[in-house]
Image 1: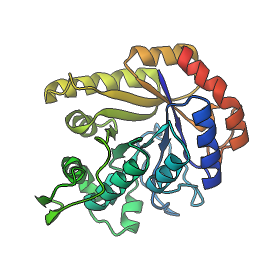
Image 2: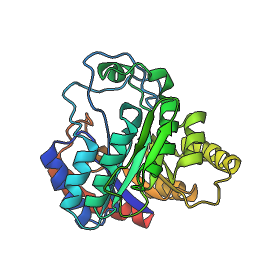
Image 3: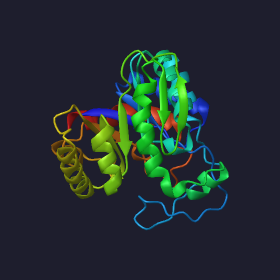
Image 4: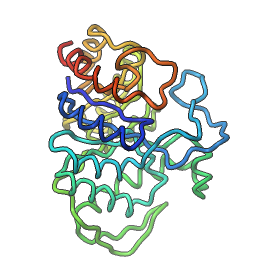
Length: 292
């Protein structure tokens, strides 16, 4: 199984240190999270918290994932990068196509775009967006558009949410940009089946994964995409053990998304993980996942 390391809640200097250590430890890729801003007060429910509210202090460290991926790609030679996930409906598809193409070109194609619809209504409102309730439809339209914009050829579009006369976006990525879609709702799984090269999950139990992946397989069968190459990348809730990793592999998970708080001693908070400890403990955790 491939090993990917999630990089949330880290200072920029720590991101670079941990990325270099991860490449040296044999990690396959690094996943970057996204929130353009953190509202001081919010009541939006966190969809993956099991009924618990999200813990997202205003001082949470969340460097822009596309800028970060470009910078880290220039400092490395082998590891891949992805967004897990980018809140795509907060962006205009033309600007997003331009940014992703640039990151891919600067990183020799070592970038995968993972997208989701977001869950934090107050974040949308802070950016002047009034279409929070329609963000799924916005993302569907964006997923149709992005591959066309990445060709470098003129594209004209007249859609429900975006319209523009013929334009060209360059540079062109050095190869197809793999698209990953996150989410566990029926709409998210249909979206993933129709558009994506893979599904990206958060921290789920093995039992939850079995149910979600069963539904995803059904949607891919309905969409006629079941034979298309496809990769499952997801994390695991709780302790990482060889038995649990092996159970994930048996479900078809191709890449394990390792969270920083699963490396080394248990800590009270997931925010600002200690980089020196992570660097020291990471090789052993990579070996555990690979050998399971």
